[in-house]
Image (cartoon, rainbow, N blue to C red; front, side):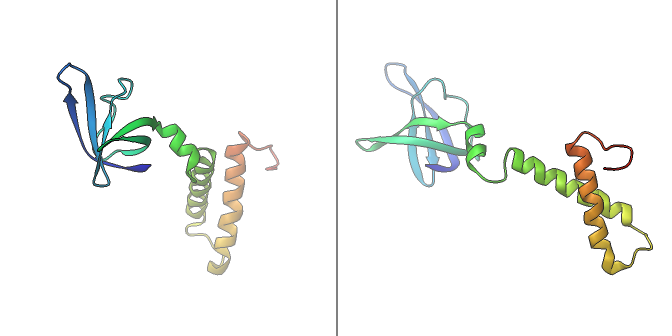
Length: 131
């Protein structure tokens, strides 16, 4: 299950056991595992498993953000590569600002320069001849 924590409140049983209750997607879920208590807040995205026990839904496992990122596209190496590519393209377009290259050819030239900048970043530098 995945959702955003709409509300969270702390509770305690009569015998002193602490637990938390989360409202996610209009449903309430109880969290009893001490390792997870006091680590979640309202507005946080949460991926978890739960088990129904009578009228209650008890969270059995919470997946940490790093696991979420590995499952979702756009994270990790892929996100870094896109960020580098966008930064390189932005820098290349700045290099061409005010150039005498015809307007219709600037996009192609910007991409060419961006690829060189990206290669420079990925390869930790270029040879003297630019290759």
